[in-house]
Structures are given as structure tokens and as C-alpha cells.
Image (cartoon, rainbow, N blue to C red; front, side, top):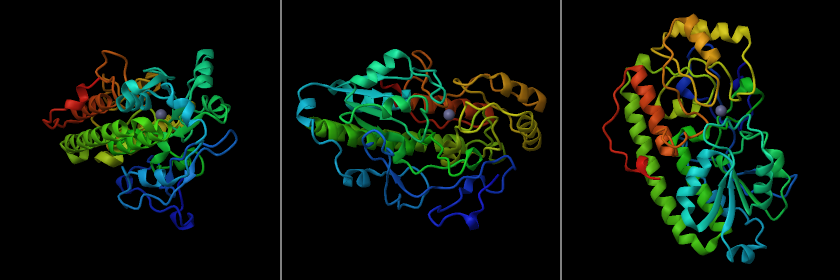
Length: 371
Ligand SMILES: [Zn+2]
């Protein structure tokens, strides 16, 4: 199933060129109209505002901070109360937790909900999570339905709780195979998008904790600069892979933003953007046939998804299954070498570049060592 561009609404502005004309398993992607992070409204509201779009025309990595700032402040009442004590912040994913930790440091009381290695698509909240969410002043979540089982809890919080769908500051790609205009939630897999998320989190922190505005803005500026350095380094490294070998086959469809940003073609994946589904025999067979046709040097499994089926596909297609896994939807545990957002991106890039015959660009990554 693909989008008929001629029939698409005018607001659907472009198909994504990286994958154009590629194998038939490629999921065609479109950009939705510009969406802007908005503080989620009271329970029952949609939780996402609409902005004027990116306006930069490059299709990735833009910064919606200006639009975010123009939105009316949410829940101005209560600001005096929270200024008296540290804000209690709950971050749902490990990625948002890590970016918030770097931004907010000792200024807030930060709790992570989903632990390193857990799959956010299928994560089921435990009773302790309900307590954390109930007591939170601020909830930072990815949005675009990534944390689908956690959302009922988040939506049920009181109107005093400020809720921010941080990942929704990025104009999403959509995977039409997963339903009409379903946004792809894996926005962080483009480091420029992560920089936008940092600015969105900083905006939320400034709104909820204006006393530390200067610190939040200064840290956001520094982290954003480092993420753009990371972005350039990843791009250079991926581009060292000979062009015909720039093929990325993974278990689930989490790397479309990465592929688009850094120039990797994704011939197909075993699962769509959500890991809850199971692939049919037909999907497996089609992927095997596509792998045989395009002949990638290796295919990859992921930390948060069982490798059993992708291993079977690799064996049938007679292609190497890379023995190092990728971190798609979660940073790694302590000691993994992928325990911060930047380290995760650097780790994935090293695994991909080494397996596909490239050479890492020799750039020292000071930010990769920051804890
Ligand atoms: Zn995912």
C-alpha cells in the first residue's frame, strides 16, 4: 500500500527522496503538515498543537522553538508553588530522560519511567509508575503514540500536571503501511531532530521553572551545538561506506529518520514502526527475496526486539546477521557503551559502518564521554 501523491491532501508536502525508486518493500513516506510541540491540555484534549511548519524546506532536523514559544503558556497558575521546591519531572523514554538530565542537571528531581533496554512500544506501566506520574509536576514524553500503553496514565493526570510531547516538535515522517498518515515516532534517530527536542525540553523547563532560565538556555545551546557536531560526524562516517553498500535492514522500522539524514537506503524491515505486530509468512518471504535481490553486506538486529525472526530471515536469505545489535528505541544500560543519547548514536554508527564496509571519520567526540 502506498500513498497516491496526486490524491494526497495539499498539506502533505513531499515524498521523501532518499528511498525513491528503491526496492518494493520500501515504505513510502510523506511529511505531515508542520506540527509543533504544545503543552498538552487538560485530560481529554488532543495533546498536540499545530504550527506553521518548518519553513526551512530541508525535510529534517529543524527547530520549532520559535513556534513553541509563541504558544500560550499552559497552566500559569501554580507557578509560585513549584518555584518553592524542585520540580518533579517524569521522562518516559530513556532518550528524553538523558537529554533532560543533561539540560536540567541538579535543578529538578528527574525520574525515568522506561528503563534502558525496555521497548517503549510494548512497555506496560507497573504500579510504581502510576505513583510517579500522579506525583509529577511535569511529564515529558515522546508522543506520536510511541508510549501507547503509558498514555492512558498520562492522560488521566490532573489538570495541574504539565505534559509535553517532546518528540512532536519534529515534523514526522509517516508510514502509510501502518495506517493512514500514521506518524513515525522514531524522530530521535536524526541527531538534528534530537537538537530540536533539546530546545523543546528547554522551553518546557523555562516555562515551568523560570528561575533557572539562563542555565537552561545556556545548556540547551551547548548541547544543541554538540548534537550538530555529532550529526556531521555520523554523516561523514556513513558516507565512507561505498554507495552500493549503504543498505540498512533491521528488525523493525525505526531507522527511517537515520536513513534519510545520513544517506542509507532501507530496502525493507521485518516489522513496521510498531513492534507489537508479528510479521506474516508473506512479509518474511518478501523480505528474504528483497535481501537476495539487493544483497546487503549484513542485516542487523536490535537490543529491544527479539532477534529470532530476523535471524531466520538472514539464514534463509544467506546474508550475514551482524553480531552486534543496534540500539533503536532505548539507550543502553551502564557499561554498554551506549548509555547516553550521543553514545547510542555513535555506537550504532560504528556498528553500521564496520558491518557495511566503511571507515569511521576520525573525530574526537568529547560529548560522547559526558555523563
Ligand atoms: Zn520503535
